[in-house]
Length: 315
Image (cartoon, rainbow, N blue to C red; front, side):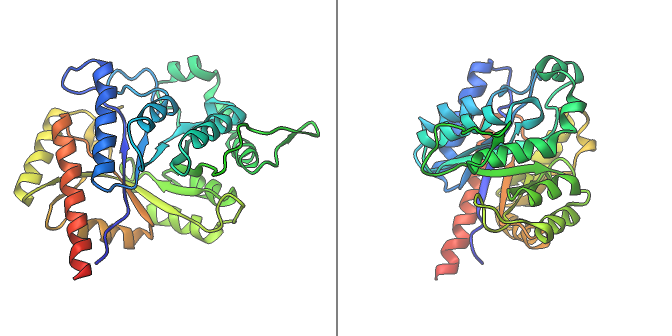
């Protein structure tokens, strides 16, 4: 049994009544732990006007965390493309790639990222903008391949780094999978948000993938909510405590898939079964627990279990 390629998707939650300043520093702390424990990626989400989530600009927090880490890949999960100019996003993430060579991932989302009023304040008519997602994806990927033109004139997203950011599209359906396949990006299925049609979406992506100079072959990640403890009983107690004390962002915890709840003895096996079932290359983990120490403890337990699997396989 081989160790799994694992990453963390952090939403920079404001927990335990701390300030937003402290919540953002907890994201730095989590990223440093992830690097120390062998996680391969650390991604940050983008949300707007949500009091329980502190990160509205993942590109800024990536810059700060990049200065406080050395090797782990850093990315957005994701920048909400319908709200922005493709050129500005390409410039921003090329700048990050020049600052942190070989470490930057550009994860793109198509969700509004907040309430209807927040979306209007951010960019106007969101529904109109999201309908333009195919054109925005084409513009963005063309900019990252230095083949973008407007009115017959070439436009380059500068600076042009030695290593481009890895480009990924996040989604939960066949439409998003199709866009990722058509424009030659990686695909991240948000299993923690919806477990409907996951296999169909990933199969559609793999079947229809078109190689580009950005990426020669399809790459699949799946984002999964997890709770882990030394024993199954302890893990289930944490889960029940979370269910009884929390509301998921935007609604009841009953509206989203339940986390994977497992002991350190079985967590890697369960994650590997999902990886095989969904044909994913990597997994992004989200721990929903409501204290910072509990969350870090879960990620540490999973990393230790993963490293243990790797050690056993070498014997």
